[in-house]
Amino acid sequence: MSKLVVEGVSRTFASGRGRPPVKALQPIDLEVEANDFITILGPSGCGKSTLLRIVAGLEAPSEGRVLLDGKAVTRPGPDRGMVFQSYTLFPWLTVAENIAFGLRESRMAERERNDIVASYVDLVGLKGFENHWPKQLSGGMQQRTAIARALANDPEILLLDEPFGALDNQTRGLMQELLLGIWERRKKTVLFVTHDIEEAIFMASRVIVMTARPGSIKSDVAVDLPHPRHYTLKTSPEFSALKARLTEDIRVEAVRTAQTQSARGGEG
Amino acid sequence: MLRPLHPVPPGLKTVLGIAFFVLFIAFWAWITLGGHVNRVFLADPLSMLRDGWRLLVEDRFWLDILITMWRVFGGFLLASVVAVPIGIAMGAWKPVEAFLEPFVSFARYLPASAFIPLLILWAGIGELEKLLVIFVGSVFQIILIVAVKVGATRRDLVEAAYTLGSSDNGIVRRVIMPANAPEIAETLRLVLGWAWTYVIVAELIGSSSGIGYMIINSQSRLATGQIIFGIIVIGLIGLASDFAFKALNRKLFPWSLA
Image 1 (spheres, one colour):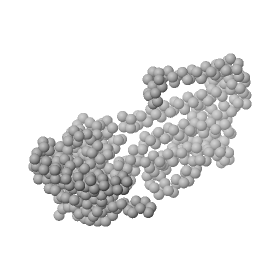
Image 2 (cartoon, each protein chain N blue to C red):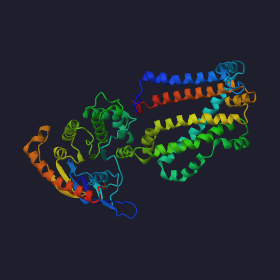
Image 3 (tube, rainbow over the protein chains, first blue to last red):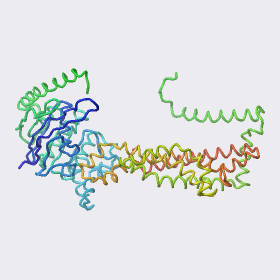
Image 4 (cartoon, chains in turn red, orange):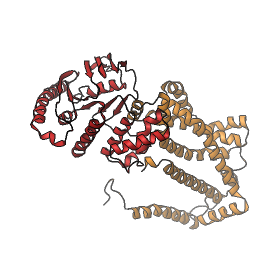
């Protein structure tokens, strides 16, 4: 049985008096196998984040349902760890306390908690920063802490919503390698939303390409590039071929988005 | 020369700040000592200091100062203990807000000073009445400001906590309260400033002690030096408590300023 099953999930937003409701997601079916790294690639506004938030339980689908290990998702929970695009570390907690947050919620004994926190601090390379406040950290370090915080809970699936979207290019490349390295060693089911084509290919074992709003799945591309992956992979012919193909797919959708926006007078 | 929004060098900033005090006192000295106004209505700076010294040494004015401070902090503490939990509850749980917000918004506009005659009828002219004036003046303000701050808690932090396994109560305890603690402390600092104005009003009416009582008492004897000294003492205590509050906030919430 698949780890995660998305069954006919759609989402429609009400949009005030008199105006027709906005369809953000067309019914989507998706199955994710255990320990797969799936990236969801789409133009901005295509509803890919909405889909992720529905899997997280932060939003309810208008139709359909999400099953994790066969159980229906009704609300957010620690079995679905999430990393957001915005910096969501708790500013009043230190790096170590942020990573320990979920473990405290599950009332884990302090000694065990400290061991786990130490191992994740190490994993994301933040040794020496345990007692720093989030605002003393760079954006990349904050997101590393956020990844450690989500992983420390040992979730069944890790959800990432454009986690490196606010970082500069160099930092983003390093973060991709870091996250991929963790996944290669520890194996985890991952759902990773991005609008960056290179990022989508580099990280994924499977790329799901979404159409412009209302979003649906346009293509489902297996990425059979070998692991462990090194950043030089991004310049290999196989990578370039995939990139060319996905660029074409996404471009059509981006053009469509731009057209519907100009037709509506630049709204949204 | 004067470019808009251009910062002023720190040294010059201090000099300018002090310069106004100097000019102000110089003007005061000039119109009083120079005989430009009637001494009966406005004492000069030197006799103000002399009167103040006599008040402190001979009339045990420091006792009045202590009484007034106790009233301010007592009434303020009482209001905070009641208002902060209500404000948090209103901000966190929307039905509670829908239930209480209209009344609190209305009550906020009831002037505390207008309650004094009523409070005297209910509680006499003792300490309880003074505390209640400050309580009535502060409690609704604190409730509303705290509720608004709590209601504006960053949603992404709440969502992050949910995905880490927080329960609904856990969200209130471990996200909403710590996230807003510095802002709540800042609100209390602000309202403490207002409490100083309520206490003086309370002491002007039906009182036999306190800084306000000294002021109203001095009025009947045309002792304007004493009145001005009293006002300055209030200002200084307010300033000192404000500094202390700020320092305490910095110590309690290093993360919000680090």
